[in-house]
Length: 187
Image 1 (spheres, helix red, strand yellow):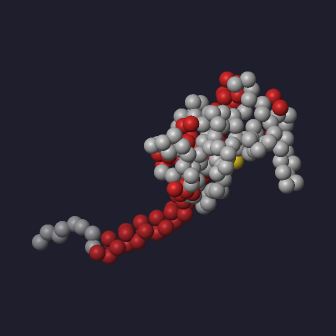
Image 2 (cartoon, helix red, strand yellow; image 1 turned 180 degrees about the vertical axis):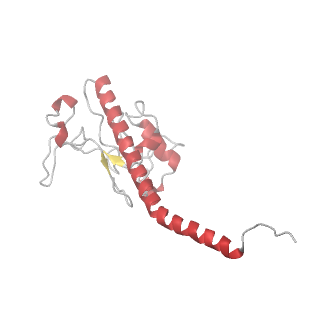
Image 3 (cartoon, helix red, strand yellow; image 1 turned 135 degrees about the horizontal axis):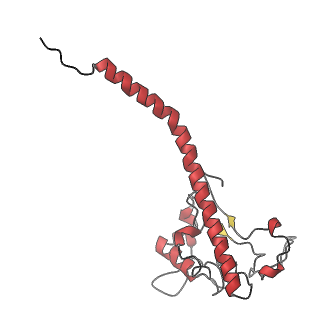
């Protein structure tokens, strides 16, 4: 009589349990790698945005793009603002509530901004780690001190509004972009 070669049930279960243990060991490490990759992606977005600001300034007599882009009072952006609020596609007007804007309306607002000709990848205006996209139309902000509409600070705040790159004296002590409303992953 000839014996057939094959796995017994016990051997098969041992192999499956070994694979399960290896996966249990590797999964936390893979989660950390995924978080690091998302953080690197967001940092790349910021670097690309900063390159767009620099190129904009070179093309516009060293001026920074405007940092104002959303207000319920007094307007919805000017042609020199870096990114606009979500913009309605059916009429020439902003969406009154950013949280109710569609993805296309959010992208349309970015396309109206002054940085769009220098960086046309609308997804780069949003960090992949930002899971608050339901209430936000972009992940990055520019401070009012960088060519902001509000002008002089109020309420005890102190800053100097810079409109040109030549006004920056200590670039290492300031920022142009800031990630906002990031939940889950800190970069």
